[in-house]
Image 1 (cartoon, rainbow, N blue to C red):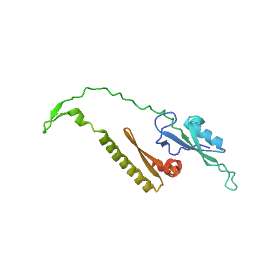
Image 2 (image 1 turned 90 degrees about the horizontal axis):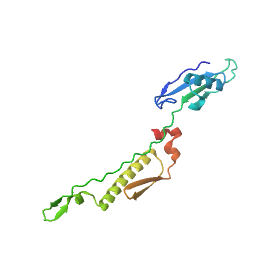
Image 3 (image 1 turned 135 degrees about the vertical axis):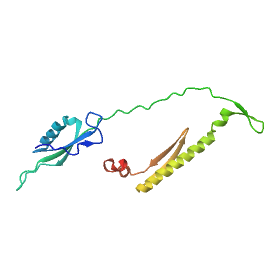
Image 4 (image 1 turned 180 degrees about the vertical axis):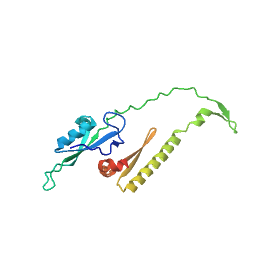
Length: 179
């Protein structure tokens, strides 16, 4: 009935701190006894951990009883979402200099540097096409169905992915998504 520590450190942060999450495997005559032993070893309450039953206790026939085995992992405290930083744009006086072209026309340099609205839309179209090609290639590699829809809005391009089997994309316990 002594708890044995398994892979002591996991890469997600310990219960209540910002380091590593502890994972303990413990045994006991019953499941509650095994959980209590693991909680005592971790020094936390049951609300702060996830409990997984590895083996349920059995009455043994010739070899004696088999104890319950549980794996207890400290929960990583949820970090509140960070509000996106907002940056204020301060107006600066641009250097508006007039330059004379070879043909003798005067051109304002500030006007010639800024891309026109049509050029910006063309650039957004190209960026959206590149993003859509990337997502299509990714779906092909993962052998997942899906339809892409590109939306161009004011100053951004959105690539919407529809009809994807999200379960296939995410995978069991997020394994595909994490990979």
